[in-house]
Amino acid sequence: MSFKANQLVINRVANPPPLPSLKGVAFGTIFTPHMVQIVTESTTQWGAPKIVPFQNFSMAPQTACLHYGLQCFEGMKAYRDAAGNVRLFRPERNCERMLASMRRLCFPDFDTKELLKILEEFVKVEKDYVPTERGYSLYLRPAAIGIDEVLSASSPTSVMLFIIASPVGPYYASGMKPVKLLVEEERKRAWPGGTGNVKLGANYAAPMLVQKEAAARGYQQVLWLGPKDEVQEVGAMNFFCLWQPNKNNAELELITAPLDGTVLPGITRDSILSLARQWGEVRVSERTFTIQELVTALQEKRVKECFGCGTAAIVTPVEGLHFNHVDYQVPCPEAEKSLTHRILNAIMDIQYGVVKHEWSHVINM
Figure 1 (cartoon, rainbow, N blue to C red):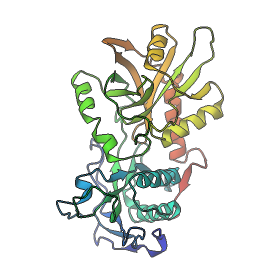
Figure 2: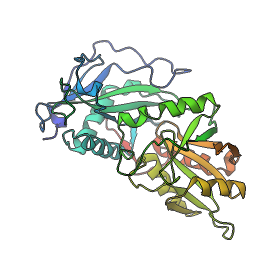
Figure 3: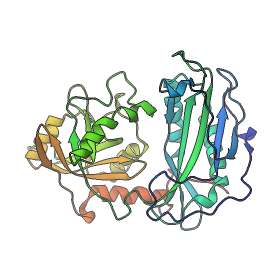
Figure 4: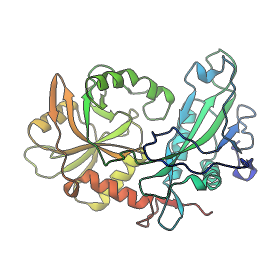
């Protein structure tokens, strides 16, 4: 049975510290004074949710999550608008994706609406840590781990779901910075039938060696390919390309990989697709395309711009990629002509309540 928000117990810190300056603070390095904890009482029954002082966990060395990758997480943000209201951006989608990830690990089910209510109560407790400036936010990190104290590699019988929060500044403190990509031609981030479509910790651990190698060669991100050289994701972001798909047709297409089980169903990804379709200025496609098609389009000057997208930066423009021993330049239009910048501003306007939209969820304090 699911946990219930009406059973939430809150244990507040007596004298919480003030929100520190976030200028120059690295992402995810300071945290609010409280956290959420929910622990199972049986294989199918959750205990009462609690908001408690931020604290370390004590675990036996044989705890399952320390050995077998029994961990998943979400990433979302709370924003403060000009009127002082605190907002979440499409939070129901994060809760639904969290459930999908937990099911992939055989963790017990829960009611996503109850999780959203608990998230709201948590943000209310930490409301003083939601920054006031545009571009700043309170990053929320729900996570779940298997906590059975046994070395057997088996479905978990004990699980903890917890939520922590970190005030953060803009991902690009001095403005959006284009990145260069190294196309990984051999090793894979995800494959058909795997776990590329859920947010498991293992999905982020395995690519780290490739990312480190790319950085050593001067490339900020890795472009991942599927088994047939189809373009998947860039780093931990979904990947988009605005191009003229063939020489004989001047129509522009905004393309991204389909949700075939190998890419994450990103909430920013879905928002971009919806906005672009609403604007109706280019064809919008979710379909398979290969690195060879992308490189040919670059050689023939048919690519207009490329970008990655995700919760942290919203969008990240691409200025180049390296494939098969060759560096290719990717166009980066000026801001007023760039779809990437238009998307960034449109989504931020919704997140900060500048534009009224159903995606922006106001928390009633």
